[in-house]
Length: 397
Image (cartoon, rainbow, N blue to C red):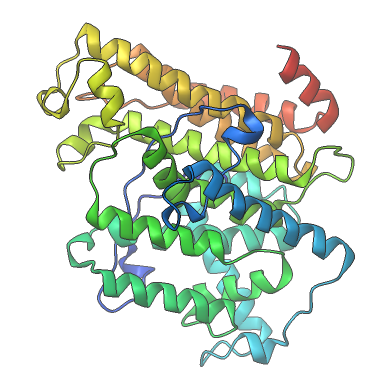
């Protein structure tokens, strides 16, 4: 999933203890993004792309953004009706508040183990918000592991169908296990729409049948499925600052942009690793324009052509990070710090790729502990600045 949170989580864990499927399921690989339009239209987008091929992926995704933003607006005027606990939690052994608290605590333990930096940031949130974020994180991680985990070879389309049916059940108050119970409770408290969750499962399906992307439009949709969705899931929980003058849609666009930026960064970092699995998450038409092919990637030699190509891909990813910054500053003050931290840290992976001479075939780009420690106070400093002031600084720089 993306690098969450939640706007940025990219979990990698053995899911055998988390997945409750029969047979085990795995998760999809991450893909890459690239902005073509101005922020509002570029990062806005996409959802029904598959239904109407004549429309761009960005237009399809934008429909999902608008729907989620509408839910938030609706909640501000009409308090959502919350189901009784007995209606929400029907799984045997999860029928009282004490056990529901334990379910949330377990989600927190998983987050603390596999997303340490983000987990520390969630501790600055209100107790209710942090628990909700943990529940979303765990569901995303479990979903990601379906096609990217140790049991990936057993994944089938039917297994993903069962996972999506399970998702529908938990949204309707019929969770299968304690992790589902935590998310089932969360979606009754916040204006979280099921569509981004379904779209993430669709990304897993896509990964089962597709290992090449002809152009950025195709890649953008994939990136939305496996990473952009995370932003749309988490903004309703993180909340928007009461003093913010930004539109709800623009904040969701920024969340989408951050998910895309993270996914693109994952793709660029993992070129060599993906190639060894026979996968190329790079736009085929752009490779051809650069005088490159899949064979060049499988050979893994850093040439002038490759360096030039990579510079363009990194520039694109940074454009998405820039767009994401405009929205992070508009989040609720208690939620901004972990998102700023993840954004600053993930963006430094692009710097590391450059420092490695664009050799992402044999060298894995990473951010050292020293840089991480320096980034955290910087992120905190940005988090405490009011939305309007910081946004003006970002626009002028």
